[in-house]
Structure formats: C-alpha cells, structure tokens
Length: 217
Image 1 (spheres, rainbow, N blue to C red):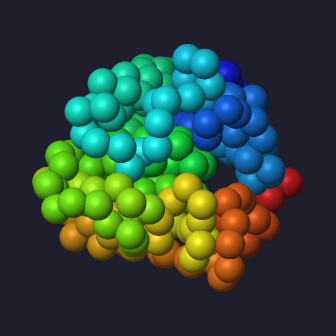
Image 2 (cartoon, rainbow, N blue to C red; image 1 turned 120 degrees about the horizontal axis):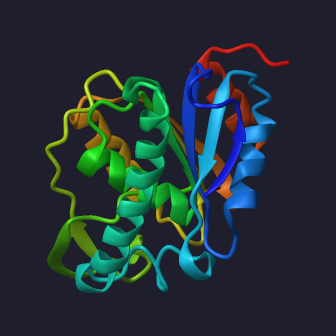
C-alpha cells in the first residue's frame, strides 16, 4: 500500500484511495495530493495487475463476487491500518474512481457503518445478486442487479459524480446507487456532468475539499 500525507496519529482525517482499471496506487494518490489539504493521512492499496476485476462491474454476480470480496478485504486492511495507528473510524473515508469507485460504493453499502464519509467518482454499486430480468439497454445490455443492503450509513456525507453519458458507468446504475445510499441514511450530494466522458474535474476536487472543510495550504 502506498502512503502519503500525515501520519494517522497526527491527521485530522484519513482517506483510503481506490484506483481505476489500468491505473495504480500512485495514480489515485495524485487525487489525494491535489486536494492540497495539510491534515490528511492518505493510503492507497493496489489491485493485482492494476485491476480490481477483469470485466465490467455490470457482469453477472457469480463472475463478480470473488473479485469483489478480494477488493473489500483490501479496503478493510487499509482502514485497519489507519485505525490501528490511532485514527478513529469516524474520521476515515473512502474515495474511488471508476472501478475503484464501484468498490468504494460496494464497501460503503456492505460494511461502511461508522466510517466518516465517501466519495464515488464515475462509479456505482456492483450489486448483491442478479435480478434475473433479462438484458437492459439502460445497463449497456447487461442484466439488472439486486441492490439489497442493510448497512446503517446514518448522516454520512457522500459525494458522487458521473457523466450523463459515461462509456463504462450507465447513468441508471449511478442514479440507483444514489438512491440506495440515501435509503441507507447517507447524505448524498450527487452531480451529473453533461455530455460524454469518464474522468475527474476541478469541480470534483473542490467538492471533496469542501466536504472535508479543511483549508488548503
């Protein structure tokens, strides 16, 4: 795992950063450093082969679940590293982009009780089972998923953004994820960027900085 920023014992917040497919810990760490917040402890696990799973997150549950479980374990280890070094769980958040944001969303929905905040950039929930409803054009031809979670995320701030036409993240799944996290109690700020794209912009950086409410250097 890559580390940067403050030590956990001296930080105000901890941020677990989850990279996208084909990127790595160093790439997503650049986002954490771009926040220019002096009181953050940053930690970024890296997926084997730079990919949390080998296919689209929309693939059937049987294909996805072994990879999701492995990814969730990596997130758990990163969080435990920060808490064991003295940072309270309530001051630790998850931030992911693309595949990493799907993993972050899934962790929040399955195991995120007690965490401080979440940031989901161009992603959505993987799901807990197949809905057996056939292919759906709004999901790029994949079948729908059961999004069945019961984790209490009461008043957790979550920032989410995605393009209206993202080649990897159907807007339907993004919006469904917004709804699920709100139903779990999270205070979700969602932003749909117009047009086609798959990336992070300065407005995302500003929103995350504002959510943490810490001054820049």
